[in-house]
Length: 159
Image (cartoon, rainbow, N blue to C red; front, side, top):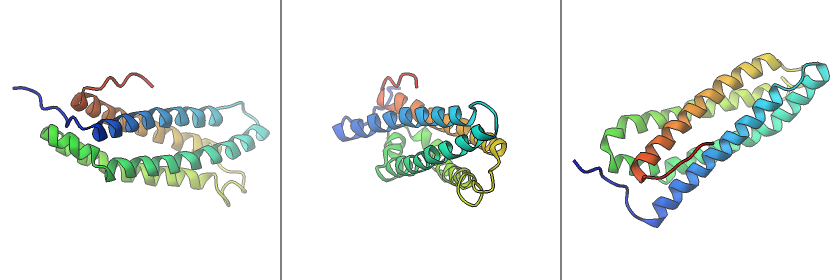
């Protein structure tokens, strides 16, 4: 059986390429937060980590909100299902993961916002929650990249 290919439209290809590029930006931002949160120990370092992480986490939250909205509104994932109907349940799971990931990044951002940050924050909890979130998001983006690569025959490449 011949594999169905995604529509040849330039718009779909540009959207797919933009989403893959956003995945790269998201990965770099996750790496940046990870580095901030795992910098040298000490009270002064903890305060710097909380302050630095807060700014980057806010950026990441906004980036993900926009990224998920683009994926959902522009229907790229539905295009994948149209080309490969067997992906229907997997795409539904990805949309459900968007909701969970939005909630999780919001909760993490609240850990570095007042009054939590003013009270000294809990850096260990922030590290633990962020690491679990980071791994879940990377797995999510990997699944999306795999679908895009398979259906659009795109060479995604690494991070």
